[in-house]
Image (cartoon, rainbow, N blue to C red; front, side, top):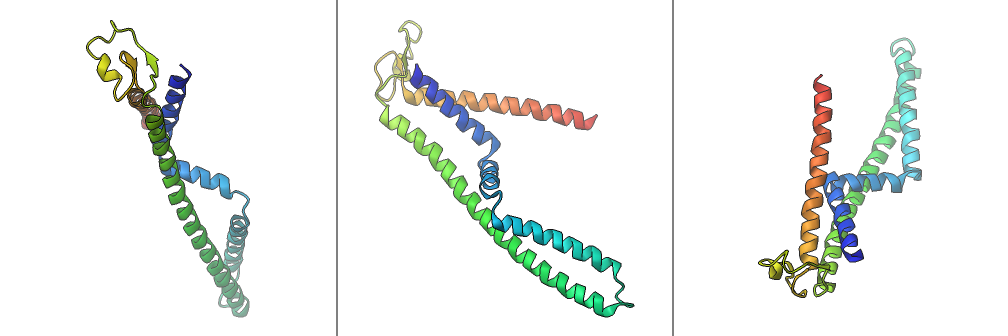
Length: 184
């Protein structure tokens, strides 16, 4: 029964990640991984500096104090250029991390499912009374489990479908509640 529970929990987690979306999970992992990194702190510092320079530039008249205005404008342009370059580098870094995390998550789930199905293909998940499943007992034990037992392949399939449908219905019910609140 532990084997059945572990497969169910794995498929529940898999369906949850699939419903949320692999890219959303990858984005959350990126945020966790890169919090406090020096590049993100530098980007925050540069953004604040650009904002301060823009507000200071608005206060200076370009006609009356041209030299001060030109100096601030050059400083703003240089800082903006640094900020844009750093922001571009961080965007490339985030995209690269997102692609790798997305591929890694998919590979983890599909490889785990494959390993479970190939390693335990002859092991029954649990036995069913023959009278309960009389005409379908053979099909429930495919590919190689003993007769009148439930094979891991069938259990993985059933758990995956049930978990996906339940999570999708919960998601749909919450999204319809949010939509009805927004309409009122």
